[in-house]
Image (cartoon, rainbow, N blue to C red; front, side, top):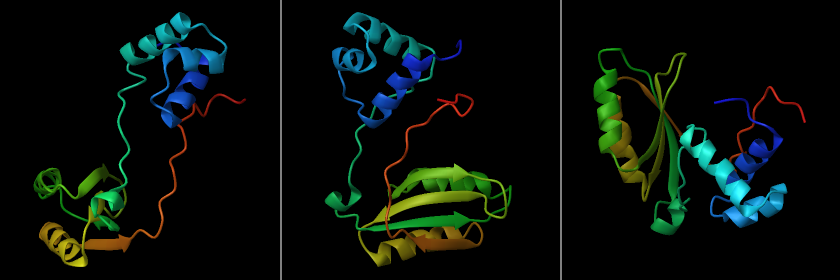
Length: 150
C-alpha cells in the first residue's frame, strides 16, 4: 500500500478507539464526506491495514476475575506441543512468541486460583514457567506510524 496520509492516520486512530463509528461520523471528524471516508476505510481494509473489527469484553463480567501472564521457556522440539496446548486452552486469550530466555508469553483469564494452577502445571510439562498476576490493565494506545512526526 502507498504511504498513509494524515487523514488515513486520523481514520485509523478513530477506528482503533471507536470501531463502531459510521462512515458519516468518521467523515465528519476528519473533514471528509461520508462517501469519501467510507472509500478510504474500504481501501484500508482491502490493503490489509485494517484487519478486522471486534467487541472488547470485560473478563470479570464473565466471572474470570484472575488475570495472569504465564511465561514459558521451552525447547524448539516442545514448541509445537505448547502452541497446541495454548490453542486448546480457552482461558488463554493471547499468545506471543518472543525472543530472549522465554519462548512464549500467554495472557490468561481464569475464574479461580485452582484453575490457574491447572493451566500452569499443564504448560510446565513443556518447560519452566513463570507466572505473574496482573494487578491492572490499561487501555491500549492506538498504533501510529513512528516515522511520522506530527
